Image (cartoon, rainbow, N blue to C red):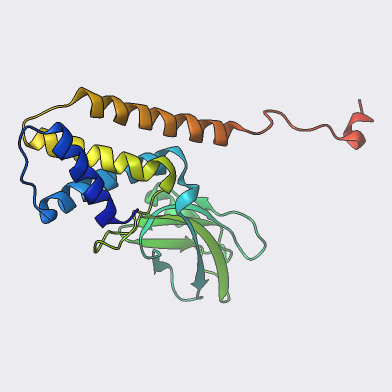
Length: 210
């Protein structure tokens, strides 16, 4: 659904459940934006793979810090030229332990920048997986950057509930539907993320060593 379609559906619910109304499109758009942010945060918490993006850091021998990718929320993984994952340095007081090694093996954050230690001896490209922030709704044709199944319906319901609360009204039917949708989303993503073997498969070569 587009933002315009979400607003129309939310307005139908408000006309049905509200004793009084009068929300302008601009007011509803603001309410939809807030509901959208909350729903996107839910999906980010349950399964951030929907928002994974790639980026290549082109490291130079004379540069330690670089800009983070646009819209970066969280770094998932950075690997060196051999495919070995870099580790994150949490305490900048330990920075001096890595300077002078001549091989980049860790990274750290400082504001909107990311630093690499040690600075590589030669230029190198380090691939990165990161979590981007959801895109912003800019007009009525914008589509919320969340899974459409259940996610868009939840935005509609949450927006209608927020509008009712602002008008000092409540509706138990909509609140129940919102809880149900959130539970359905949690159940769906928990099942999907847990749908794999909990133990390593057998290896005949290793079994012979028993």
